[in-house]
Length: 598
Picture 1 (spheres, rainbow, N blue to C red):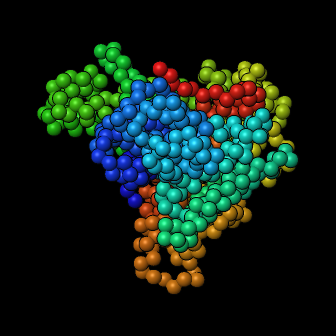
Picture 2 (picture 1 turned 60 degrees about the horizontal axis):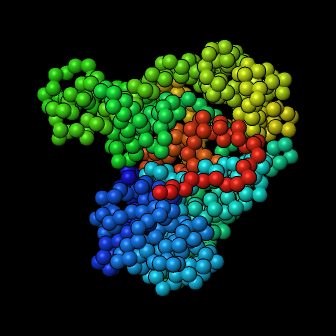
Picture 3 (picture 1 turned 90 degrees about the vertical axis):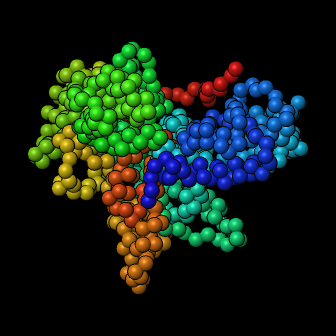
C-alpha cells in the first residue's frame, strides 16, 4: 500500500474533510471563514496547509476561543469537538449580535442531544448545516495515529483518578471507532489478556476492546443503503503500556527515536543555530522527503547517507568534492538559489545528525552496551548475562545524569522480573532518588513487577521470536515486543489464551494471504487480501517512536497487510518516566488547560 503524507492516514483524513466540509460549502460561491478549536487546529495542520485551504475557498482561519472582529457579510464554517466549552463559544458568536451571516457547523464526533438542543434554542436561524464527520483522532504519520490525550495515562493508571477511568476509556473507544470509520473498516477485535497483580486485575485492554466493539456495532448498524455492514478484512489488537516496559525507556539509535530522546524537539519542531549564529527551526514531518527516507535508519547509516546526498548535489553542479561542512552548504545555497529548498533539508539533517552524534559520543555510547545486555539477556557474543548487577554497576558508578541511571536501574529490575525491597532501597540510594523513588515504584500501577514475590512467577517473560539470524548493530540488538506481536498477528500465530477474541475476524483472514482450510482455494483470494487487509494495533498509555517504526517495517516485509499503529499519545523515555512518577501525586483540584486570548 502507498504511504506518505498524500496517501496514508493523513491523505485519507484530508480527503474526508474535502468530501464533507469543503464540498458542502463549495455549493455557495462566497469565500468563507474557517473557525477551529485547539484539537481541530492540530487535526487540520496534520493533513493540510493554508495554501490547500485557499484553493478550497477558505480565506481566513480563526481560533474559536479568541475575540474576533465581526464579518457580518461572510459565512463561517465551525469545525469543532462536541464539548460544552466549544458549543458555548459558538453560541457567544450569535447570541447578542451575530458575527457572521450564517454558520456551517461540523463536529468531529457524536454531539449529544443536550448540546444540540442548546445550540438550536440559541441560534437555530443562523445554522445552515450541522453534521458529525467522525474524525476525532490525529493522523500523526501515514501509518500512525494518536487520540491526542496524554492525560489518559494518569486517568487510567493513577490511584487518585479511578473515577475518571471509565469516561477516559469511553472517549478513547469513540476515537478508535472514528479511525475505523475513516478507514472504512469493521475489524475483528482482540486484546492482551488481563494481568493479575497484587490481588488487582489490570483489565483496561479488555474493557476498551468491549467498548470499541459495542460502539462499532452501533456505528455500522445500518449503512447508507439500509444494509448492516459485515466485518471487513481487518483486525484490531488492543494492548496496555505495561506489555513491554523495556522498549520505551531504552536508548534507541535509529534516527527519529534517537533525535526525540536526546535533542530538544517540541511539537515536531527542531531548533538549531546556523553557522552565522542565527536561530533556525525546522518541522520534522512527512512533507520533508529526506526525513521520511532517513527517520527509521540507524544513526550510523544516516551519518553516511547525508554527506552522500549532499555530494550528489555538489556533483550535479560541478562543485569540487571536499569535506561536507555546514558552512560549505551555506555557500552552496547562495550560489544556487534554485536548489535552496533541497539543500536546506540536508542542512537541517546534517545539524540534527551532528546533535545526535554529539550526545552519543559524550554519554550514550557508554550506556548502550549495558542497556542492550540487560534488555536482551545476553551479550554481543550471545553469552547469557549471568549476573545482571555486574552489568549495571559501571553505569551507576559513572557520572551519568539521574534519568539515565533510573533507566538503567529499571532495565536491571525488568531483566530479573522484580527485585527484593532491600536491594531496591540500595539501588535508590545509589541513584540518589530517595525523595523520588516513585520513578521506579509506580511501574507497579502498569502491572510491571518491581518488588519480586512468589505470586509473580506467572508473569515471566513471554517467548520472543528468534532473530539470531537477523543482521543488527551491536548496540541495537533489542527488538520491540510489538514487532513480534505484529508479525504473529499477520501470520495468524497469536495464542488465543494470551490474545482472546472480543469479536472474530472473517475466518479466512490472517493477513499473510493463507486461506482457511475450510475454504476451497481461489487464485484471486490472496490478491484480494493483498489490496485490502489491515492490522491496527492500539497501545493504551503511550507509544514510543521505535514502536511506531515497527509498523512500517512489518508492512514493508509482509506486503500482504498494512499495519497501522496508534495510542492515546506518543512518549519519549523522559516523558514516560515523568508520567510514571506523577501517578502517585494527588490530582490538582481543578483541571487546567491553556486558552489563547488576545
